[in-house]
Image (cartoon, rainbow over all chains, first blue to last red; front, side, top):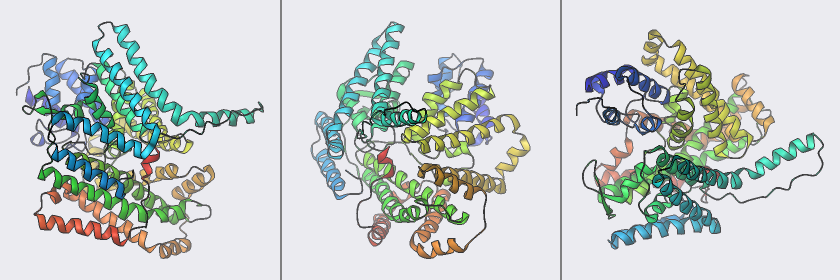
Length: 79
Length: 491
């Protein structure tokens, strides 16, 4: 599932999947702004058929945080 | 106590020495609280009581919200906390503004006697520490934060002196774990952290503080007179003169505020705290939304997380809701800066830019436009357009007089192509103009280089000392003669 998360992040922020790590976030992905942040939430929710809460969204600072919250929704994500 | 004064340097040196000599955890934590309270008392006298009240209120409210099993009780404490914060901030910051508006409409409608103004002193840093305290209780209410275990810990978070009077606005979930010893990357022990001033932190902190002093005392203070010359009475000036004024003010404001942030983050880093960046090369932003990921980041993310996201979260596909939410968010951002119409106009214009950009991007973004804006020419075009719009808004940020503001905005948009007066202004202000050009070169260099602070602080000691020497020699050579207050102190 990590690959799926990376693919979604790469698609939303229009960057290469090779540039993404668990530490990627708004600080090192230039196109990660509030608009794309919400697009990412939409894409993740649609793909994994889940609903994030607002505190989960505001807590996301890196891709690792996304994976942590997906786990809370019982989505199996590789370490 | 201004950062750019001898008082602060002496104060900070004493704090550093005491922290490094007395290696007792409890003492160090208590000392941080008292030195922070002293810092504010020295700056703002008896208004320190407001900070103490805010600390006590939010610590208690936060604990009660967390403890309450009953949702109604949770809500009541949450409302008490929010009303308490907004009440204090609103009373001290906006009462006279509201009274003035009442009196204006009263005289317009011929209602008779005027309500007298309260003429309250604005407590320094109040906008920063109330927003910090609000985020603390909102996070606890949302369930994403556990409250501070002790009042002492919470007091360090709110009163910590480097960012106390002009930010960055701290977040509890980033700051509180730094008060405890780390067990591993993800685990924090219950043991209080022992503050040790390491060589690495000292070098990094001194570098960042020096850059902050350089921005403030070399650039901002020397460019300021040019801004005053042009903006204090712009009527009759040519378009290019107005443009020079807006560019000068944008750079002055950036160097002033990001300079303050750098000194605050650097001072915190020396003491062992990591505070996130507040500015990230904003003059290379390539869209209105990109600008707000680079300018006053701690406030823009605060507004995003606690106002914009809650407003649009459930209906984020509705264009009108997104538009209105962005407008409201930016109006709040504007009024946060001060009780004045010009800040509301500034926020409103930014809101319009952001809302129009977001709606256009949402509905008319095709692969070919995306491809164009990823190309070099597309990137340069988008940076130039964004900066043209951003600098336009600085007119509203500076000018409180509507006639001046309208004149300057008209000249900025509808160019008259006259040059005679502009050439004279350039001749009369050679130093500020040269500093603007130098700033442009350095800003571009730091944009291309990435994390320049990290790079300087990792240099060999003699190169590092050489660069710092250049900073301080430049400051000394062009020192304006007195410590000028930071613009963001008034907010």
